[in-house]
Image (cartoon, rainbow, N blue to C red; front, side, top):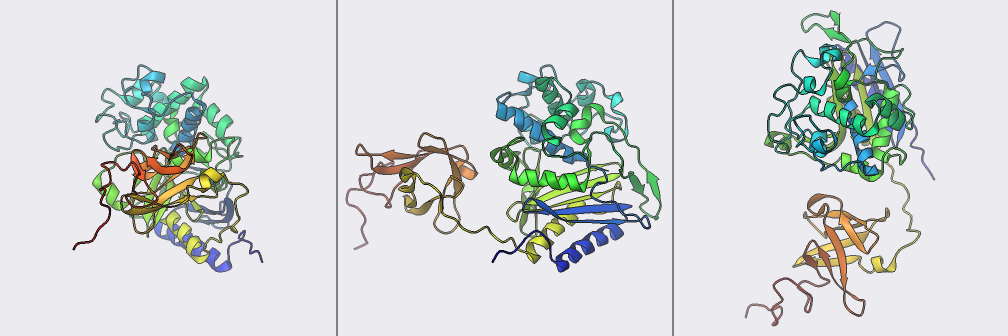
Length: 461
């Protein structure tokens, strides 16, 4: 019997509605809209509003602020995958003359380039981009606060530089490149640089009285790649599905995994709270669950897109107020409600259609010294190596096509795993970045560094 996961149960839907209703009422938001995605498909939308008889739907645009950075990062990773740049390239190699060219592309993506958080005044979010026509106007006289690569320091100007980099390498505007390479292939027709009707107006709500003030809506100019976009819960739901499941026309699954991997050195307080920044995405911990995505804000608007990757549940929440409901908490709770009320039903187990015998013979138990490890062949064509029990170093490895594998995560990220064979073709041991793994602990005759005592194992007499 097959159970459909397309529709949420009535109790789950009511819990989701209750959560956004509380957020809108207690946060005093003029309106709040939300969507939930499960298994790559939208399964719920909801809205609450202060306007009698009218509620925005999944096609109404809101400004999404810094979620724009994730779109910009996708464009940069596309350039990397095409060979137009390397993430370790200094900016100066491709965009000379900025004065901050020693920062690498990866450091700018991860807010580790040492740049200031904001542009020189006036506040760029509430002033026209025409006041900052050149990159020099965005960076100011003192753009670097610390040496690149030393620490995480969120920088909006850093993403203005990445937008300029995209324009230089593509020979077209950031807006044009984004539309052609991301928005159109993913069918994000309601995501745009400028508002398109129907769209919400941005408001400031008085902190001590239930009255409102309209916020200005500025074109951000050079700062657009850091926070310009308008979008809808419908479009962001599709974008969230892409960030999990990929679309080879836009970006590979491997590159998206890289985008979701921590990439910046963080302060102790961030580490303790479970926060880390990746390549255009951020990871946050809440109630024992890792969530990856991005938050956003501009005067008059708040936005959040968060994904529980393990559960394949994503939530999008948008509001049209400068401050009020804590949208990360709302999005995290929407993911939790679905994940806990309706746990993911795994796909049926299926055997591999084919297997390389030379890889299959490597599976099973191995020892690094006396520490027992298991090597497994996974259904996605990777191999994994990790402790048989307890905690310890573990990683998945992708095949390189020459009988070796490269580590994808943790201590072994980028390290080479290879099987070393004897003259007769049999496997002697595994070599992982100079670590020798043998079939028996300190196996006799194996090239164990430091050698093996010839008297062998013994007790105490």
